[in-house]
Length: 281
Image (cartoon, rainbow, N blue to C red; front, top):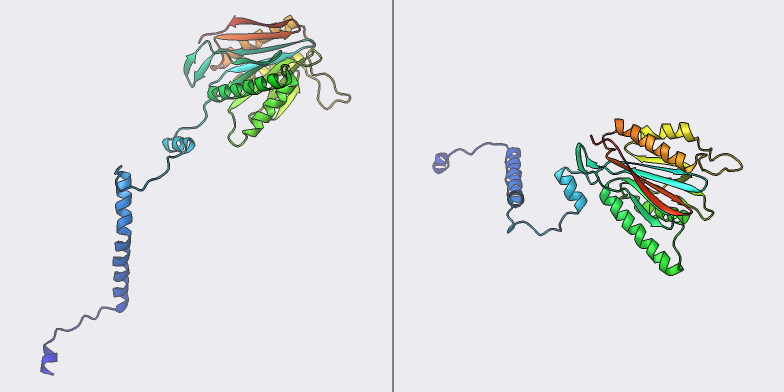
């Protein structure tokens, strides 16, 4: 009994506190390697970081805060007549307030008497045009003839729809002559929905140009029965003059449209081009 009385008194801390401290110590011990691993990864230590696959281009751009697409501006117009088609586009290529070049053609010949004018991201536009040109070349070798304009219109729609989940950032106008020699214009959105019309405009200046074309040309409604041909009543020279006027007007208000307008006229005699100067500022 005397020895027991010399022992120091036991601490009367509650058991609940001891259990909590044990859990804290245990948790800290378990998460220590994870903290060290995260610190080594953030500091760029490649010896302790686990191997990982490289991020996709989309993921890398989103981490840097960049956007995958870029709008390079520009305006495209097409008018179909009874025996001709006029396709026009400006030659300015810009990013924001910076003009990259003043001599960039937005019009590409794809098939026999069939051209495409595109506005949007020039990287996707070039990829789309190369894809269509390759498909048209295969068609030419297999069938021993060039693709018609309506066939190219359907091919363009299928190509755009195939990429609908990561679409080409390109807004296209396809123009040319059909198998009967009549002018035809096809207007598209970015995922392949298209319509045959008598005239169309795409690009940054389309909201300024379309009201003028609606007032001057008045395309017949596609709901009329029997259906009417979607061609304009203007002659070829009048259509070219109208294109010059609408581009001169759009250049006054749209900073992404300017420098020159490239006009391609398609008729039974062939294809010809002409250029008209626009504002440079």
